Image (cartoon, rainbow, N blue to C red; front, top):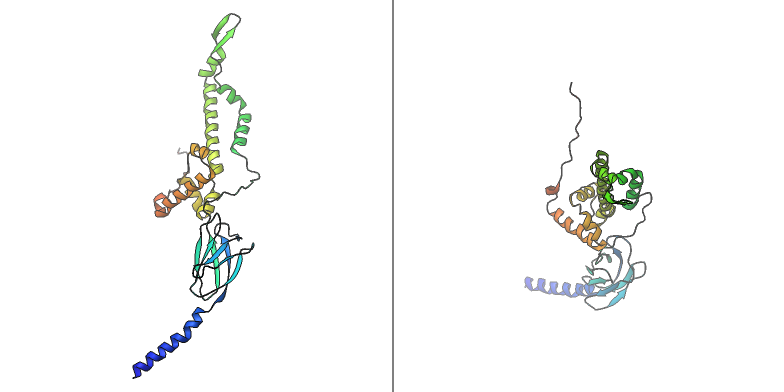
Length: 253
């Protein structure tokens, strides 16, 4: 008999509380870009239970009625959709991820391009570039064709050899500057979330080739960084490179 009373009491409680769970409540929220943290407007918000569709404001804010447990999906062109469940807080914060990552165009002041650095080096070492040039080994004069003494000198003189080594070093530095100009620590941090020190280490470990940088689009460069970062996350210690020790050179008598 007591058991039956408990059963009836339980049924009564369920019957009383169920309407409370079915009541609509006001739900507010904001939609953000996960990477830039900026608000996103014109986002389509759909209640999967009722099929009701609303759009947020240009400030990224929205308000609509829903029930506890309802699933709300946010859909926006250029972003992956995201779904959140309505809880007791009545506040939904969406952080949408772009379908493709765009590199913002940033104008950098007081930072020379690789081409500007190379041009300046050629001006500073104009004599070296002149000596490094092979010229025409054969020359044509009034008496016919013959060997150019100046060109032969340029081929075999010590000064010319040193000049060619110098210009080769300048050309190699130019290629490294091209890589550094696009494969920046700031870009790596923006895509991976690594701090400055970790991004610098990542940049050193996964440094791409000069020819890849020349041919890769911004989209391909971002995908390259993402791919390398997925490898890096598996075992960061595997890629740790000990810095070179500082050597104090002293002359021993």
